[in-house]
Length: 424
Image (cartoon, rainbow, N blue to C red; front, side, top):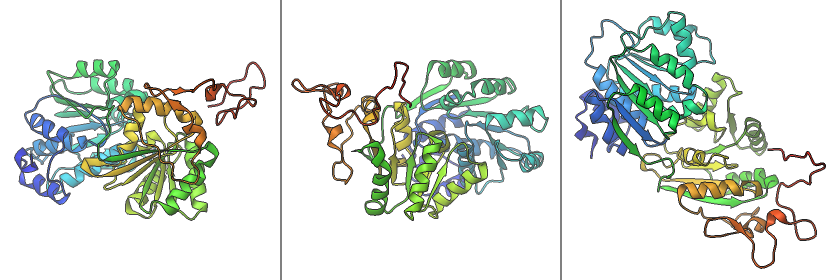
């Protein structure tokens, strides 16, 4: 199918053509016609499948028929993070380039004055995070009485970040007569209940479940001891990769530490995480997009919404304890059918996460041994048919070895008393 088959109006067709769009992704192909029919919609689609265009393009087309003499909020797009909200508004700006519609993004973490002034001047499409939206509603700055379309994006992330109660408060303030579009990468029971409570006989579409990764992404694992990870990352960036790279860190402290190490090696690097100010985060993201910064170190929450055209490389400095996060991380590359590369550093404490991740995605990720920090200690931990470490002969598993029988597992520290617990 081609975008011309979706019967889009000429201003939108022209704008998306300028963006280089020719063929809609599966979620776009299935959602745009149904949303244009005024149907409620439930889409289960992971990051990188093109769902922002899937709901924003039909919203723009529907609202293009409105009378623009009065400016009241006709469409509200609610999303969990500032980065994702900004990204959505940028896409709306691109797709609606030749339409007279006014759009605005509001979020916390910055002074509200400019956002408030823009709202008072009138807005057709509002993209918002829950906290700032509720603040403006309570102050009487925002009225949703004229709302026609409500989009709840990244619903599962709303749950993860503790925003579900805020979302429910907002839903109670919406007009009963409206079109509701609900998007989520996963459908845990609480999110399914929320969807059932606000959708009216919706069209249901599931595209690329969270357990799958794009076939265009080349995945690999590098076994490396924890203390060598920074040196390995520096080596790869200096000798193997010359393009921009998005690196995922498990913690904010870790992101800053990685950034400092790379900066000392004269690799332009910035970190983006929740402790950074909104301006700092936006500047870092813009520098990365423009190529001024070659490497961006991000935590998972801060990275949600990072949408960078033709990003070729994602590196997991460590694997997340949540297997689904791996799919979201590497989905930052290989977007919309493009090719990408994902590299994951795995030390002894990451082996369980690796096993769980491979079980989720239904494949064993190839191990790259051709690097100067490869460790056979991890390779020696063979796997059975269920991908679990096993021993051969009378040899004890790695986790049970002591000094007498061989080296302790990487990262292991001997307990100094019976109340010892390993620091995570």
